[in-house]
Length: 370
Image (cartoon, rainbow, N blue to C red; front, side, top):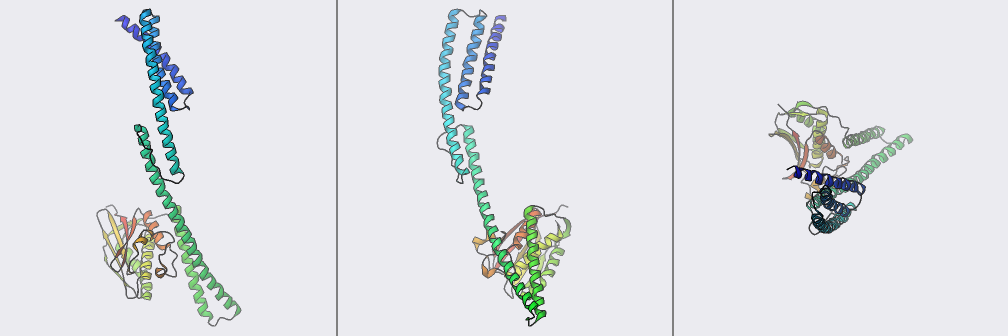
């Protein structure tokens, strides 16, 4: 029993020395190819066996003949292990190189396609992660292109909408200055109207910039949805009378909501103004609100005749205003973008869908706690 313990101790010392040497070598070549690392690992295994054997032999536990036999066996094992490690390393390196080339493609704007052929579990998992990343990157590029397109449209619309009233204001101011205005009071009223229009446009731009910058500060409080809708209907009634549109709000449940009253009034006002301007005379704009198990749903239904299906995903985009026939003169394509931004700041969502004779905008808000 004592001899066995001594043999184990001497073998452990010799193998530990070989392992320590191998660790030092791996540290020195840590930036080398995986093939070199696998060769060192195989060499450490064989060297540890040989070092342990030599340590036992030096302690006089092995005869010269037995040492020769063991050394020959270890040498053959070293050859086989080294060749196997080199082949495995070359195969893994080749697969890694193919994977790197494939990954480079979606970094240059293409889509990632995993290399053909078998791979280790780790490389296969890495390929799946790269495929998922490629999909997310493609979606991000699409969103970036959509945002850039929206930005270009917004700049174009704003430039047009600013140039028209400014040209009118300049002409009327010059007419008043030169004393050639036939009806100065009418000119002054028109100037005030145009200034208010520009002021509203600048206010929308400021609100949208706060939303995009993430600086929109909310002061939520518990208020009745019935009162909120009632105030919005009262505010939109003059515009509805001007356009000959009937407002209906008799399907609003008196449920409480946790919202910023001022910002949510802006949401309702934008939806109602949008619906009234797109509903023909003698049409109806209906407001409804109901509470489900986990949310409160507020809807505004107009009589615009519907929105083309291909345009529905873009309705809430910044600067988008649809066809010229459905674009109000005073619009800048910001109202619905502001609606979405405010609702999302309340952790809600906005949707639009076509219904018979028009379309329905829905705002979904989280239901307040008890």
